Image 1 (tube, rainbow, N blue to C red):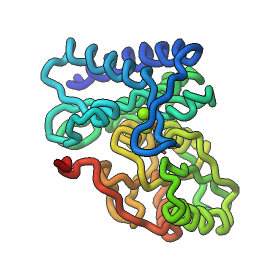
Image 2: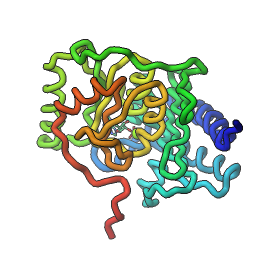
Image 3: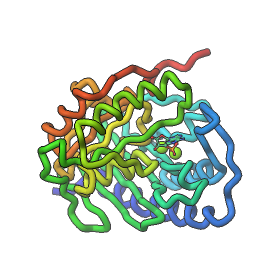
Image 4: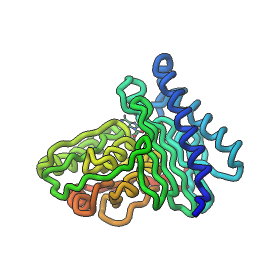
Length: 280
Ligand SMILES: Nc1ncnc2c1ncn2[C@@H]1O[C@H](CO)[C@@H](O)[C@H]1OP(=O)(O)O
Ligand SMILES: [Mg+2]
Ligand SMILES: [Mg+2]
């Protein structure tokens, strides 16, 4: 059966590749860093230029589609997911890595209709790996099918997470308590690539059993969430309920056994939702 979103997905892959070229080029000369929500929440002109490139090219081709883009939201645009076809864009996931030339940097493009992610594209542009997933049709890396790990024993798992962009000692302590619980289960290891999107692609690829984090935004995980589920993985909220991409919390794992085991060890907390009304 013809896929109504195939041309949109083809466009997403093409523009993600173009965006990745721009990121690779900018690695050599653009290191002018600005900050956003905290002294370690970084943004560069390249983040902004790449987001504009993606949005402009999509607007020309699909003028009725809507957008949620990290840098547009930072500039004051709303972050509401409607039933309309919506491109959910993180132009550079891993800006801190980009600034330091730490080699995990991704362009992340999710596409939702009726609030459901229809396709996801994550281009790990320094590794030149194009991760794609179409709902119901599997997940791929450079065209090769992806499959999550078959491991069900948490003690033999690698768990990915990040420390986030808050350096408030109380908030850091909170993150460390969950991390300590998980590390001491024990697990084989804890890792973090420095980008939510690539962490999720590592789960989809079977290289890590799980990824969890509180503090992510919808643009960090929209594409990756579909890549994980289409590779056979599961998504949960950190309290074990259904995942809610606007809630800033996620557990992505190879299977429910591992996901639920991790949930037990997380000290959850809530943050302001991505779709909370703007403060005036
Ligand atoms: N100092 C920091 N360290 C790690 N991640 C950070 C960070 N500041 C912001 N983030 C963002 O938080 C996400 C989840 O950890 C990352 O993918 C990253 O997305 P970003 O590069 O698009 O801002
Ligand atoms: Mg991001
Ligand atoms: Mg970003």
